[in-house]
Structure formats: structure tokens, C-alpha cells
Amino acid sequence: MKQCPDCGAQNTTGARDCVACGSQRLVTDPGAVYEPPSEPTRTRWAAYQPLSDPASPKWMESWHQFAAQVGGDFVSERRMLLGVMPWGKRHLVRTEVDQWLVTLEPSGGGADDPRQTRMSAPYAPLQPLSFAVFRRNMAHDLASRLLPMQDIEVGHPEFDDEFVVKANDQARVCDLLADSDLRSLLMSREGLHLGSDGKMLGYVTDGWVTDIASLTAVHDLFVLALRALQRLGFIR
View 1 (cartoon, one colour):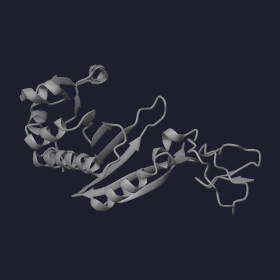
View 2: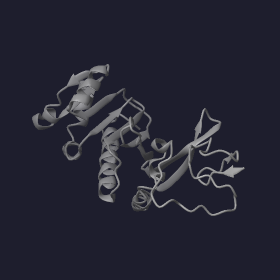
View 3: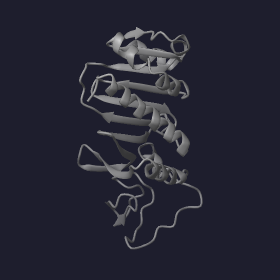
């Protein structure tokens, strides 16, 4: 039998890839110490394990430092396929901000799966508000046509020129984006999407954010949006 050092699954002696996570680092003797190859080896399921990629060892260090800085926890969780089969690992940072649990995690990384950094927090709604805010470009303009919400100008020309705003309530989203600090932070970031389905606030930015300063800026923007929603009486 061969054991996978990444997920611990047992594999047949003739196996080359782990049946559970796709790793190519199988060890014949479970007690043996695995010696990594001279060149980094990407596993078949590398898209599901962005922070485990040997080509980017600084990810773990940066995200651990960020978690410590904001008083959060760096967590590695085993992914499960259909709830029963191990499917790689999921790495994330969880922080408690006021009464909200904020989760930050990377996604993508495969050839057809662009890298993104995502942040989310569920909340208890007090007023019905769903919205999406994202920068104008061809991909986002196409996506905006698929959202069943009206296009809105918030009354700040420099912001309206750069962003598409969709919402189910124009007055409420204009109240939210009347916050000059929130608009300023949004305009300072590239390739972003901030939105809510009415029960969860979500933020997506292009690429894997690796430096602590950028992680902190994204976190500050997200927390500011949550507190603005609460201040306006939209969420608990």
C-alpha cells in the first residue's frame, strides 16, 4: 500500500496519483519521510489547493501573519466531495468583527479557473436589499446584463464613470454609497465585486492577494461596508 502525505489516504501499491486528492507525492512506506523533487510538482487538483502549491510557499506565511494581525484564525479544512470523499484542502482566514464572522479565502488557479480572493460574511437582514457593485469592463458588463436588478447611478460622477451598480432598491443602495470613505476604498481597488444577496455580504477581487498591506485594505473595505449597512438599519 502507498500513503498520501497530503491527505493521509491509502492507495494501492501500483497507484501513481492519490485517489482522494490527486497528489503525486505517494509514499510506499507510511513511515518514510517524503523528499520533495528539485522542481515543484503541481498536482492534478492544484486548482482546489492554491495555498498548498509548492511553487508559492510564502502564501501560508503571509496569511498566517494577516490572521494574527486582525485577531483571526488561519484554518486548513479538508474538502469533501459529496460529503464522503476527501477532495484536497481548503485554506482560509476567519475573523470575528463585531457580531459577524468574516471569512477570507483564495479560489481558482487552474487553466480555466481564474485566481480570485474572496471575502464573505452572513448577516441578519432588517431591510430587503440586494446589490452588486463592480468596475466597468467587458466581462463585468456582460455579467451585469444577467443580473435581474436595475442599473443605478448613485449621483457621484467620478464613481458612476468607473463602476456599475445594480440593486433591487435604488434609494437604499444610494444611501450606502453616499459614504465617501466606502467609495474611496472601492475606487482604490482594481478588479473587484462587492455585493449582497440580502443575507450575505460578499467581496471578490481578481488574483490571489498575498501581501499583508493589500489583505488589510480588503478587510478594512469589507468591514466598513458591513458597518455602513448596519448604521443605515439594513442589517442587524
